Every structure is written in structure tokens, then in C-alpha cells.
Image 1 (tube, helix red, strand yellow):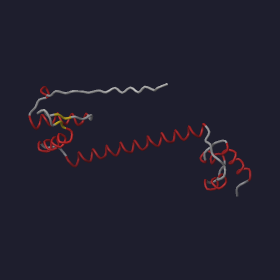
Image 2 (cartoon, one colour; image 1 turned 90 degrees about the vertical axis):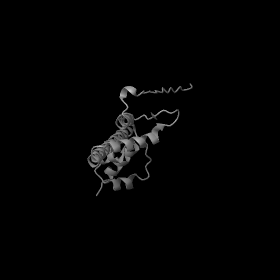
Image 3 (cartoon, one colour; image 1 turned 30 degrees about the vertical axis):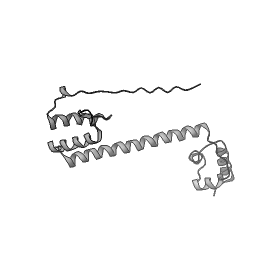
Image 4 (cartoon, helix red, strand yellow; image 1 turned 180 degrees about the vertical axis):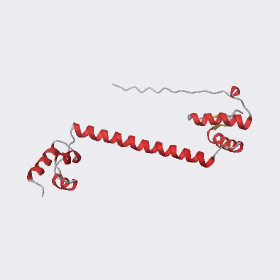
Length: 153
């Protein structure tokens, strides 16, 4: 059975802007009991609660990011295991696919345009393995864009 003091303390803490998790640490009741007691109490989070929620969101985002990174690493390892060493034909076909999707097809030049260094590195490998083109005969252009945002005061 819950005491009247527990309920009053819960209501006071809620009015002060504390979250259910904070209140439960100071008043040992279930969330469902708190929900029933506090359903008509307006909630404006205080600074502590806002900071706590912010930290929780950051922690959640970092956790999800780590899961995604681990998943990608696992998939990459599995792909390497499944595919094994690329044959010359594999390199040729993959290079053609990249060229079709990312290549410039004008002016009689062979161009690969991409911002991913792995794609550029593979394109160089493709040109070398499939066509015997040495790195010294490849011209690389790097375009950097600087964006400046000015606020009108």
C-alpha cells in the first residue's frame, strides 16, 4: 500500500519538472502507479531532466551507431569470405559496372567521378588490371567546395 506522503512527494517532484525515472528513484512505486497519480499534473521538464534526456539520446545514438558499424564490418568480413579473391574477370565486370554508373562518357575520355575514396581506388585498380594502364598515366582531379553561410542580422 502506498502512503499519502509518497503520492504528495511524487506530485511535488513532477511539478518541479522531474521525469518518472527520477521520481521512482526517490519514491519507490511502479510507473503505472505514478502514471495514475500524475495523469492530471502538467509537465514542464526542468534543466536536470532536459540534460538527462539529452544525454540519454546521445547514448542511444552512439549505441545505434556502434551496432550499425559492427553490422557493416560483419557483412564486409562475410562478403570477403563468400567472394574470396577477385579474378581478373571479376575486376573487369565490377569496373564496368562502376564506369556505367559513375563514369563520364563524353569527349572520348574515360572518367570515373565519385567522392568515395574506395571507388576511386578500385577504379585505378580496374584500369591497371583490365587495361594495363599504369598509375603514372592516370590524371586525377580533386574538386573541393567551400560553403559559406552568412546570416543576415
